[in-house]
Image 1 (cartoon, rainbow, N blue to C red):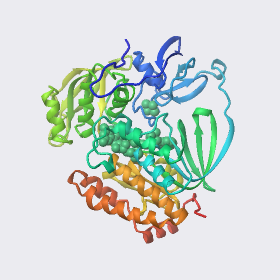
Image 2 (tube, rainbow, N blue to C red; image 1 turned 180 degrees about the vertical axis):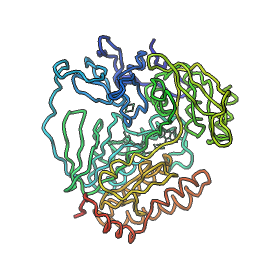
Image 3 (cartoon, rainbow, N blue to C red; image 1 turned 45 degrees about the vertical axis):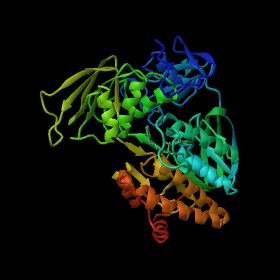
Length: 497
Ligand SMILES: Cc1cc2nc3c(=O)[nH]c(=O)nc-3n(C[C@H](O)[C@H](O)[C@H](O)COP(=O)(O)OP(=O)(O)OC[C@H]3O[C@@H](n4cnc5c(N)ncnc54)[C@H](O)[C@@H]3O)c2cc1C
Ligand code: FES
């Protein structure tokens, strides 16, 4: 039943020591470095909890800590996101049930330790490409920097990207995503950045204090930064259809996490919805991991991603069905067994009688990403809904400063794009913080040069035309930003002095 991948054409999985933990009344084997959800999935345990509202079975959906579909109780602590909680030897994990067990039946949780305070020049939230770049740039310019990430590994979504970056060595051209993550992590360490892993930022408050729950040490940390770069990334959008909450229906990125980060086969047979680059790339990666792809469904008359990726899939025998979508997911005990696809007409309406039924234990949704801009909204930053960016994003100046003074945005959190532009935005935000806090003229020069490259060369590519226009819509001048601040005074600010 072990679903781990032991040989792969591109990846070699470095697993830590083998350990065991308890899940309900079972002993589960795992490897250090895996999360609880990954280890359970590898052991063939798919139902890891029940919906609080409907009592229906639930399994992982996003695998990056964004959706709460994988909540479990660990050693008496409820609501632990098992997809980002690393296994530890000897822990006891239980499903959350509906209604919740009375406290008398649960083991009492260890109380949190004493809160600690950290004072720092710059706090970077999120250690994906944008956050790593911001931290390295700012530390290189003499700021004290704390980088906080809720995952136990740095690199964000790059950890699971196996394709090579384009372009020059300056932008990591020729390296695979996970190699770029390793390189950037090393650079950040060399620059003297202090890193907290397994720590979640949950709010930015009056008096410029940022709340962090340090899960690794079970304690609250109050951070007092003079500036903040928030680069919290993105999450996958869901799709509405009967059966969409079944176990086995998940984001395409979640399957990528299982395969490429943990070396676990996410299923035996998959149907994918969405033929953008994520859908096409994940389909190819599934085949590399030994998963059959029964079909790739695309509601539009033509594929959305690059033709070269689609041609490769067609050569490998994957049927790409344009003008098709998912009608229903069916299964037993809340676990997916069949996917019903249907044709749609020119208006996007389902065509009766055109249904095709696929046996599948995986239904992967690759229907777009949405910025994770929650911390900006919570801090009271002025937001705008920009469809081309994937949803609500904070307005910002060319220095990437939002309407909350001293709060900068970089990467997907400010609008969906891709890793290289996230890195460039990270450098800009890190340099902007250095300019704000130290009046570093070299930082100003660097921002000008990076902005020129980003807007006049990199984003000039027709492939990035949509995201370029969308990102433009979120930029306001310094004067406009002052008006926005006067009209919507933010309740948080980070004083430069
Ligand atoms: C599921 C998914 C799959 C993708 N697949 C591809 C692909 O195959 N190819 C491709 O080119 N691009 C892909 N992308 C696009 C990718 O997001 C960008 O290329 C790039 O990784 C964006 O960088 P970032 O630093 O902005 O965000 P991310 O790389 O998403 O990093 C964000 C980081 O912030 C951390 N974080 C978030 N919130 C908090 C918090 N409150 N407290 C502490 N830490 C926090 C996260 O743990 C994460 O490490 C994918 C994106 C997603 C979401
Ligand atoms: S939060 Fe764990 S699967 Fe989404």
